[in-house]
Amino acid sequence: MCTGRRRVATLHLVPSLFRRKSADSDSSATATVVTEEPSAARPRGYTPSKKELGVETPKRPVAGRRPAGPTRPLTKEEAREQRRKARTEAAAEFRREGGPRDRGPERLLARNVVDSRRTIGTWFFGGALIVLIGSNAAMPPAIRLASNVVWGALALGVVIDSVLISRRIKKLVRKRHPHSGERMGSLYLYAIMRSITFRRMRAPAPRVKIGEAI
Image (cartoon, rainbow, N blue to C red; front, side):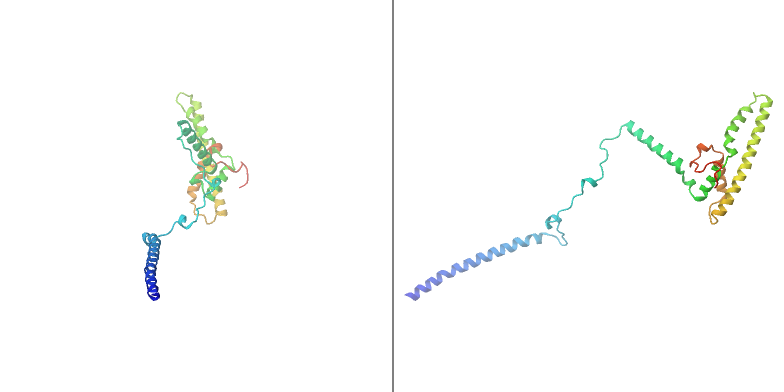
């Protein structure tokens, strides 16, 4: 009887062991599936984001940010004032630095040669206006004759002055810039055109005074 009871007790325990094992296997399988689902859903070459890795993106400091532009459109008066200011700045820069044709050490030397002396060409346009008025048919013959004499004297003075300026520039360029590729004819014309311009209207502005050594 004792032996029979022991067998019944043993058989009674066997199903409970199997049930516990199946439950454990089911839970482990479920855990495996749950853990493997995210990796299966990700495509090949997937790169985790900083948020998934637990890394925070540093924010740009407010002090270093670029100030935002105006949110409202400019009025007509403001746009006109802005254009006027831009033109004034461009004119001042041209007066100070000149344009592309004024660049180069040879051009600077030619300008200094012209600006360091008094030129007859600065009186050319004023004399031309006087000659134009004096040569009118309504003027007396003596005034018309004087106007023609003044006109001839001005033309001759401009020619002589241009020759002297060109010779001076040629000498200094050969001495200070012997390997210069600047065309001398273009340089002479540049200096002559500057010599017949009023000193206050020359651009770039003169950097040397009259009589200063070059």
